[in-house]
Structure formats: structure tokens, C-alpha cells
Length: 228
Image (cartoon, rainbow, N blue to C red):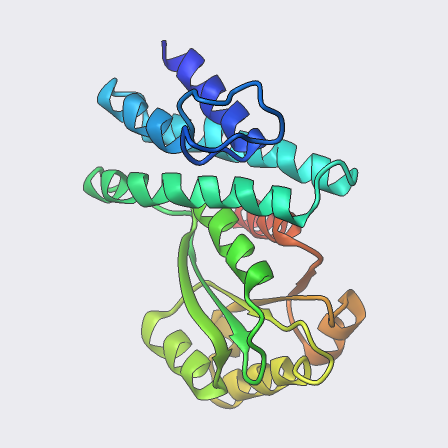
């Protein structure tokens, strides 16, 4: 029973079906329970939340990532799957908290000052939640002072900075320098991403990593987990 429902959750993530009203990539599952209904059924059947996340949600998104890399899926397809995972994590969050399940680490993410683009940031936040991280989304057009204050007060292990524009990517450098001046830089690993930036730019400004997309962000953070 638990294996069947977990496999069903994985397939519905791949199909990008949040609820039974969604058709999905193809119409083979139309009218059947989506991720939300399946997660609720699984919890009622006492299926382990960790198994739902690892073998259902995360495993499904790994397939989506492979399809995206192979250009079989496009951004709307990936976004539909990510939204399904996000809805599932909203249901699972209180269950995980009540069970005192430890997260892999606290991750803060923000689109830098002057930039209002949020699709990429939102996908990263959703996927990292599904991968077991505690995610704090600081929003778009976030002033450097707010980022520094959050790092000082909340002490996240990781900070993600996003910028889509060449005119705003320089704000990432401003944030890193501000963290350094506040003697906070050594306390947090900084990951950058967005259409405007690159691995070379990450090295130039002293970021810890450049993430080409949401899937690479998960891989980078998980690699840090293995080193800890």
C-alpha cells in the first residue's frame, strides 16, 4: 500500500499534477487524485513523511530535472511540478514539526535589490523545501541591509542570491561585502544564480557557488551535507 501510493506521488510530481483537477503532461491520469490528495491519503494511512519526501517528492523532481536538462521539459512543465511539491510540503510541514524531524539546514533566499524577478527564486525555494531544507524566502527587491540583518539574527547556514539582470547582478557583490564588513561572511555559504550570472562571476565576487538552475542548487547543498 505505502509503496504504491509513494510511486503514485512520484508519478504525479513528474506529471505536474497538484490536484485531481490538473490534467498533467499527458492525460493518462486525468480525474485521478493529484499530489495533494495522495499526500493526504498517505498521512491518513500513517505512511512515513520522510518516505513521502525522499521516495515520492524528491525522486519525482529528480526525474523532472533530468527531463529539463534533456530539453524534454520546459520552464512551465518544471514550474507545475515544483508547485505540486510546494503544496505537498505545506501539508507535511506541521507533521514534520510535530515529529521534531530535523531539517538539513536553514536556507535564506532573496532576489537582490532592484530586481523584481522571482520565478527562478521560487522554484529553488520549493525544491529545497522538498529536499528537506528549512527555507526562508525574503522576497524580491530585497535591500542589502535586510539580508545582512536576517543572517545576523536568524543565522542561516546558506544564503541564495538571485538576479536576472546585468544591471542588478552587481548587488550580489554588495551583499557579500556587507556580510564581510559585518563579520558574518564566514558564518554562511553564499550561492548565486540567475540568467545574468556565471561561475566566473561567482568566483570574482567571492560567492561559494554558482547554481545554473534549481536542481544544481539542491546538488550543491547536498554536497555540503556530505562534507559536514
